[in-house]
Image (cartoon, rainbow, N blue to C red):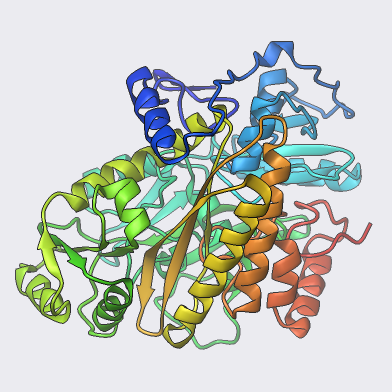
Length: 515
């Protein structure tokens, strides 16, 4: 799949041209050997997709909207989770969509849903394909069309007075910002997947962006939605706020393509920042670092970045050997140096250090590519994320680290667990855990699934959420069903039945399949 002058990888993250360089790979392997000298780091190349035994489509959809090309079907079959990458590397083909539909207009979306509903064909809405929770995988489905919205990619209208824009759902992050630039406004929603993920995907999964406080989720930036459902189009009124009953937007935000297909949205914009200030602070203990981060989160200073790295995370990705807090402030209207100074005062005896923030940012942008490279060497490198209240954090943290350490020992023999805060709120943090362990080629997916189950159980049992910003998909369903109130689950199922009577929209996600 071509993206301008680059080629999207069919088996892993991002583009072929931006994959790790030979020198970068040698450095990664050398780093792993230093920590895990007994690991088998044999290189495994991805298979040629033309060599794979791809089953023929089971449907014959009408018209030119639909593609049954082999690579098209393969590249739309999975997201970007570790288990997606390992299965692709092993040449495991199934399950696949039978066809990929690319609507050019909203009426095309209506036509696809009508045809699929009348022919009992499942429909999986697809944005940038960056799901890491099985959200776009046609798992346990008989006949499937993947609905790729990438041709609905325009900023249709800008309201400079209200600072908002009407935007089609298929636009990826860089194109969205490029189209807004002439207006002098910006959305400034930057998830790690920004380069490839789309507005519709952000809305459907309630995506979290890079910013640590205030407008952290796409929810905060949503003014109204337009959604095509199998029973009609839902369009909410543009309003800055409303107390008129439950919010219709909230029904579709986070619905993961199960209730309708988001085709457009009005999003709140802002002026780009002019003033910036930042610093990195090193702490003598993890506990002291957590307390300082909480003080800043509850101070009302609202840093744009307030990312805490534990010693292992700081060592692996920022070159530091102790807990490090990365702080940044920005504003379009006023200098922010005084805000940074106040935040540093709240850090108490923390020591300001140079270079950590820059090294972290560089590693952050390369992490997905490096994860894929390590998978080629049979390394298990993946993450979990959650959120909890401050009063429960240390208890949850201990439970997660203990569960992860135990399962890594049982499944892999040895492993490393890291933690960072991606977002912070006055009432709690969003911890993000990383695991690094040697795997066995041929067993990587099974090993990961066992690790995932053990840590997910610890998260739910300790009062955290099964996901803070990665969505539910198919991978999180067992724990999501336990987290949500039973009455809400019944209401969600009723909404599904009303909006999607044939049950064709992304079956198996958020609600139990009725068939």
